[in-house]
Image 1 (tube, rainbow, N blue to C red):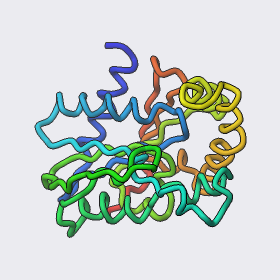
Image 2 (cartoon, helix red, strand yellow):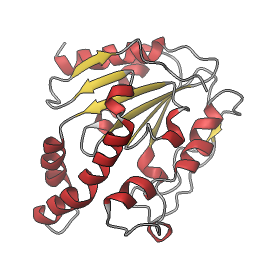
Image 3 (cartoon, helix red, strand yellow):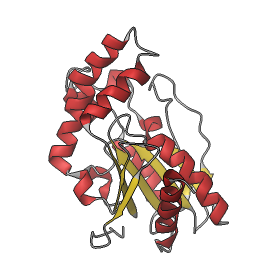
Image 4 (cartoon, rainbow, N blue to C red):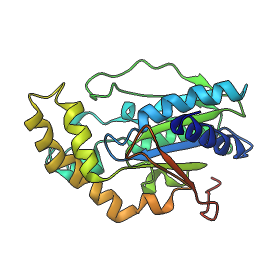
Length: 230
């Protein structure tokens, strides 16, 4: 078994060890291009191979606000990216609270496409009481959301690597590599630094996945860190 496969198995075991009288809500947090979505997609399969419990997959990028509703800050600013891009109330009320204590288990996995331009006709689904939710996205340990996770996983890479990977990835949909690099330098990375400096997500997560080298990730479990029970 290679290092990545072994890390995924270890992470799956930690997820399945969390016991709640409701679905277990797992946050896969991290900066842009850290590898959150890939990790979550791979972890879904590992979990399904190891348990008969329902595994729910949600991408928090499907809970973005429409651009025209982001009015407090200039739309291309780091502050708008950090504070206005995601609809934290919808994440909480339509995804996390229904799966928590006293929730009715009726949840929605997304409200818009990842560009936030198109409203999704996502049906309301009903989760099993012992389901596992894997939700990946940025800023998941913000105060508006933090108490509603049963396990926090932080996917850690350097900001230099964020810039390198993000530029390579996003030049495919932007005008050029230069345009993508400019966006990361002026909006995404400064916005994510605000989050890191204010929330200290790496220092609060129960699990930190070092993903600087995706083929050889590391996993660190902080058993002493409190896990909320809301």
